Length: 280
Image (cartoon, rainbow, N blue to C red; front, top):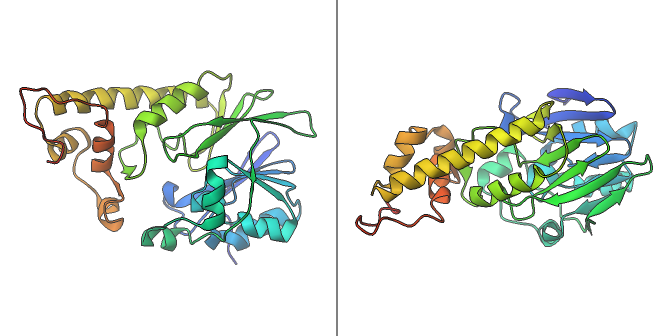
């Protein structure tokens, strides 16, 4: 019988970590429950574990942080099995209903979600227990990435905005410059505890997000400085992040260190006295 990799609890929030490869943080995902509300649904290939988690206390409402399969994978089943309403960012809706491309490794690790017709998130939700949930757009990891802030508790559910303080890899479709803006935006709110979909519960979450933002800014500046000196992308990557690892090979370059370097160069302009080396 499939079981959760790990269980979490913080006050009245419960969470389970599910995934096929439990030794890896990025290949597992945490489903959080606050009363009758579920935040994200886990990957489709973990449905038996998620279903067992929900059976004794079925959700009435599901909030999705974004469309990626490790977060939305069981939304259709939960809607069908428990009759829960599923709310998602407006940009997620066509992707959830019509589907989206999945590289082979994503199908292996998480499986493919069933299509679902979800409802658009409102900016604020008032819960029966008196709490308020504010949806904060936080693009970068994906265009539809959204965080959920509960001001009365000082809680922030970050989806994939945080994950780690010092990222070394990036998907080819992510935008770290946009993610920096998103970090600044959420840091304007008053919160302390972060509920990350991969890292878990981070008690000093504000500090963690501040550290990630500072890391991004520092890395961006170093990358752009080296680029303006005429160094090619591959050399910048070696100097700052080291050699590519198995993850890049396994994903066909979809998840790599070089993606991160290139993305941080999106706004950089080369020194006119040096040749263009972005392709190097």
